[in-house]
Every structure is written in structure tokens, then in C-alpha cells.
Amino acid sequence: MLPTPSKLFDLTGKTALVTGASRGIGKAAAEVLAGAGAHVTLAARTAKDIEVVADHLRSHGGSAETVTADLRNMDEITALAERGPFNILLNNAGMNRPQTFAEVDEATYDAVFDLNVRSAFFMAQAVVRGLLAAGQPGSIVHVSSQMGHIGGKKRTVYCASKHAVEGFSKAMALDLAEHGIRSNTLCPTFIRTPLTAPYFEDESFMAETLGKIPLGRIGEVEDLMGAVLYLASDASALVTGTSLLVDGGWTAQ
Image (tube, rainbow, N blue to C red; front, side, top):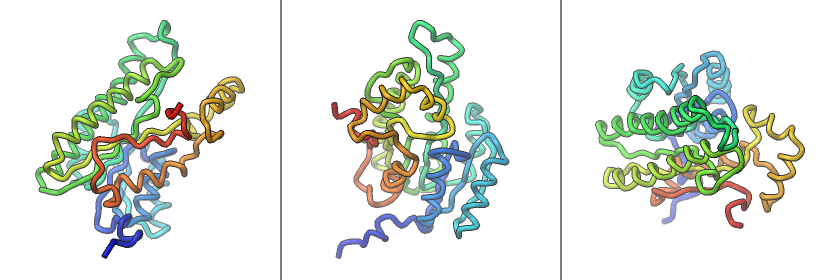
């Protein structure tokens, strides 16, 4: 008998770690994972912000705890992973500093790669080590970008960092398949969040962006949550080493 939809997406008994959980995609993902039954650990640099999110989850019947961590610090990555093992990692912490190629300085390059690549890599590694030690399967979901598949103006460093995430996620999938640990990327188009809101105040940027999205609108965080739950759950049990593009058709052109 085929599993019911509710069974496919049920995360009861699972533990999930969401980084960058204080706002935007991370906050919404924490709500969805908790709503599906997972115990969610929310991690971010600001304790006050993630406590507000955790309180909201608990008030709606979810199970949540918080950890303040700067993922640019290896000791804090290790300490965070030791609170596991985590069956699900939403590897979401990231940043962008839009500059043209000629404008990029060493500080910008280092800052973007430090968080988007180095921190993401070693956060995933720390979680995986915990799963291997416990002999448990898991799902690693890296929040990448459509820019990991294409190029973009004023985004040379950001594009390079997300192409790197796409590459190591595929290699991870091959290394970890025999242990039942899956690795996939979630690749959004431009999503309206507190961090991206200033971009959309530029009318020319908005017009150019909408012109590249066949579905004709900017994404909202809600548009990503079906994909988050799918990749985190047993509904995607045979899916690893792939990229789920939620881009309104941008990369189909």
C-alpha cells in the first residue's frame, strides 16, 4: 500500500538544525519543519531574534530550542553540531555584497566565501560526522541560489560561492549515499526578505528582474517551503546530489 501524503511528509521524531534562522527563509523553514513534527534547533548570531521565533513555534505546538552561534568560528560550529545528531540540516546562513567584477576587493571576496562556502561546508561536515557516529541517515539541504547555475550582474563573488556549494553538495552526495545521508541544494530566484527588500526599491532593478522570471513575480518565502519540506522528508528518499530550482522559470530560458 502506498504511503499517504501525510506520512510522506511527516517529520515526527526527527531532529532538525536550521542556520540563519532568525529571519527570512530560515525563519519560515523552521516553522514548516516544526509544523511537520520535527524538533527544531534554531541557530543565528542574535539570541533575541531566534528566541522570538522559537517562542512563536512553541506557542503553536512546535518543539524548538535556540543556539547563538557565529558559523565563521569553527569552535562554534563544532559545539552546535554536538547538540545533535541532527537528521535534517537546513544549511541556510549566507550573505551577498553586490559589486561589479572590477570593484570587488579582497575583503568582500573573503567575507562572502567565508560564510557562503567555508562555513556551509564545515557546518555540513560537522552534522554529517554526528550522523555517522550515531549510525543514522539524514538529509542535508543547502540553501544555494539560481546564481549557482547562471551568472548575474554585480554578483561575481556571490555566483562563484554558490557554484562552489553546488559542487560540494554533489560530491557529498556520492561520499555519503552508502550511509543513507542525502545532500541536495535548494536554489531560489530573488525572494522577498528583510535582506533583499532594498534591492526591490530600485525600479530599474525590479523591472529587469521581473523581465527574466517567466511567471512574472518576485518570490516570497512561502514559495520555497514546499521544496524545503520535500527535501527534508522521506518524500524525497531517492533524491540526492541534485538541485531543486524554485526560480519562476528563470533558468529555463
